[in-house]
Image (cartoon, rainbow, N blue to C red; front, side):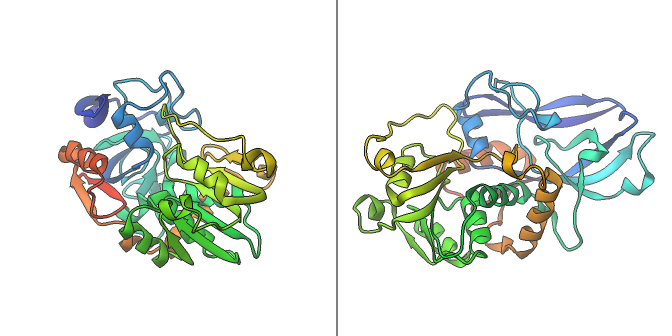
Length: 333
């Protein structure tokens, strides 16, 4: 039996780091000492702000995220650490391995060995905390099915948006446009493979009209969905990767959406498109995400790290939009 320190979201804009007891690992479990964990600025800020839909399951596909959205809530899903203890049925080969896990923020945790992903050679812990974002980007590409010669637009150049631009830039599309209000992020989008970048105002004024074949809404702002629908052409597709939580916005569905037979589709990384499940599973998708991570310019995304004890400062900084880099991590060293 040992102790761990775990981060809890306790009320809107309040967190607490609490001591919890870790029992001896079950026969098929291991204990991991965390080195670094990544903060998802999308879903975690919704939880931080209290904008989640209450009593909704957190994630039925991940054991560590069982339960419902309600305070107090341990949350997070990008932990990287070292295996320091083994259950009696776990091979000694696991001891000392650096691994990735979909686990909430904590300085150590126990989990099933089979749920861990050993890091590939050459991938640093900070880089590995981006795996959920790259996996989400991979899933967005699978769901959107970009075709050769298509005009593609991405709304939002946050971490997931930039990872998605990186993945989409490898497709033979005719043009890849990113819509983003922050100038620094527009610059990053160009560096990650966008053919052009525009502001939301340009789209709203009609000067940035693209008559796109495929549009991704990744801004996290429900009102942006109207602009996404306006940007797509006849029989076009809008893929919504944002999670809005309880946030609401009116949508104008009486114009081009109705007349132009626009398809609106949700994309969520917890599941795979039913049409693909015969050939794709989460393991295959995660392998592809690893491949994408190894070609991603992570130095442009990473850079701001807070000590675990200063996690409250990390969330306040993210909430204010004043982070120096898109991807923020917590360090346990």
